[in-house]
Length: 58
Image (cartoon, rainbow, N blue to C red; front, side, top):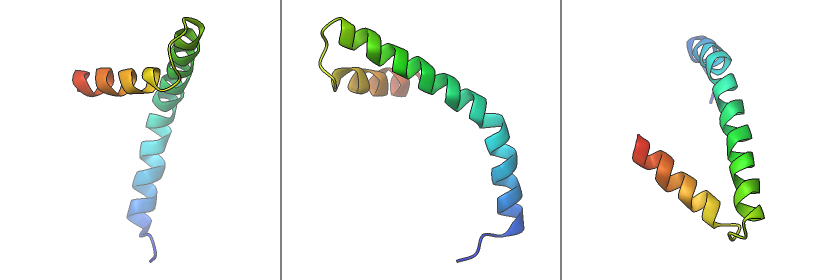
């Protein structure tokens, strides 16, 4: 399956705009996970909470 030139251009354009946002979310998520682990919360709970909180804000 070959990707069309239009799709390739659209992906390139979108990734240029979304990469900084994705990077910021990854840094904030990592900081949140480290903070929760330092407070003694289990490893799965920060992921579950962030999924529910971010999904609720949509």
